[in-house]
Length: 316
Image 1 (cartoon, rainbow, N blue to C red):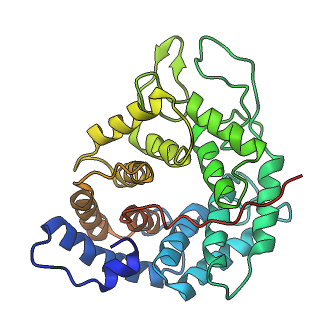
Image 2 (cartoon, rainbow, N blue to C red):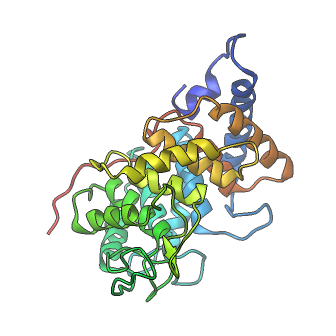
């Protein structure tokens, strides 16, 4: 199966591996729980947050659960500021790196053709293109190029890898793949890859010492770099790093982002279903987190068809 609906309605054969059967059953429970979620947060008792709301909306839209997805995406519309940004939490204007994920959620719901979010998307894209991280001159003690314009976690701070990767993915999906800011974002993500593969929060060297890679940020980087005509050898090294380091001990978010990155490069490992099954069991037993359950649902796809797309648009 290549979609959540396929998983929900498929009749598993007797020869399927146990991991696949368990993951299919968990997906039914995950989607059912996400359908009823009124407030999406990072933890079972947490408060509303834009990231888990957008991720849950993407998972529900991908599963064909139109009404549930529309209910959540309208929450993102209500918190969108006059400038077009979508803040991390309600009743505050910043930080607003979650605007990238809101763009993806609105695009996913545009496919339903029952309600238009074009105005929300256009305002969010306009805000995105008007903002950037604080640049700095290159410094050999740092290693990466801080002059490349990207996006930051908070206003007037350095451009960091993860928010830049998220905005690159959103701008590509919104039809801005060839925009100068998107191209710069891809340069930044590539620049932040470590010499031996992988990436972390965004630094390659600290006081001359190489930093260590992390699966979650590496997977996100690979997702942003998918379908790029990029021959940098660190990309292959990064794919190998994730392949070699996914295990039953990998945390849920890292596992999911690692699989999303590998899947985007047609390198989905054969043990993916078994790993997802184990993580799904853990999350369902410990108390549902909308953020983690949505990631598990999206990582269950065997391709990246869950990512919404919009036709290439003309730019000034």
